[in-house]
Image (cartoon, rainbow, N blue to C red; front, side, top):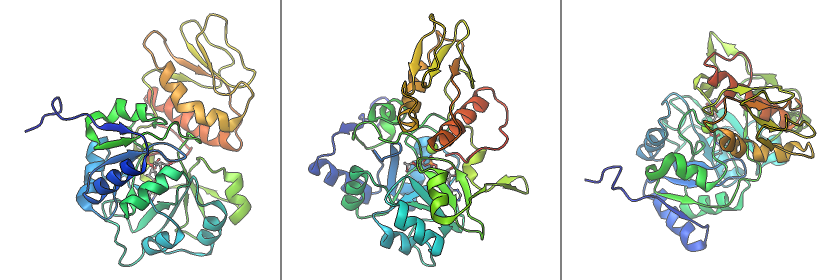
Length: 337
Ligand code: TXA
Ligand code: MG
């Protein structure tokens, strides 16, 4: 029997038509394929296949109570999985395909495995815009359940190399589509209540969503339980502590700059966006955190990031990472996965 040391390493392959066909066959056979999306890399399997979905949770060491997002080709496919309302229709019309995940009631008789949604009667769905994601969904001819392709609790991967570092022999194929253009996970909006709620800030801004359906409520906790189960999971944690809103680095710290903020001359500095551009900063965030997460530093000091547009999602991830590395519970903020 193969052990982890003798098991074949997953192939990292370019998204050629032949490789996408092979990936589609793997999906239909209930196997795991890591793939690029416009947000982060996903770890995908056939969402209708209970054992395949169970294999995703096992590969990530993900708690079974934390439900997965289902990736679909288009709105027609989405309407077979969930019950749309008028708000969902408007958001789909304006913001799909894209980095927006909608939580809606499961459709009666939906083919999606209950394990995908961790037994909930709601389902998170999204229609991705990345051409490789769309090609994989077409080749597999199945709805694809996929969390971010990292071990549970680690920083999301934005390159195929990041996926290989953390999941190695636990996936059957890694499709390399280059760096993810947005670089931060999708925005998760809960439409199962009269008042729409933001469960996780992400790649589509709150401002863009509110322009379509009006004000979003912040996700409140109910009876001590967060409405998005991912909130319970330790998240986005580099190994080093993070120090946020830092105007400059202290001795021993690495510095993650933004815009004109400069660190002390001696510090190792990466700049999320020298021009102060939030989309550029989001695209660089996870890769730069990984690059600075090295034992020769005592901590990563991070420059202040404006709390608007994509800055909300960036600050949400930074606050969760800081809370996780400080090992203290986080009050407020978005939902994690
Ligand atoms: O951009 C993304 O969203 C990436 C790519 C691969 O699509 N995926 C991703 O998945 O970030 P994941 O599993 O890392 O995060 C999914 C988040 C978690 O916080 C989870 O708790 C929440 O969505 N979620 C999923 N289904 C839900 C549901 N039915 N109700 C509430 N929250 C849900
Ligand atoms: Mg995740």
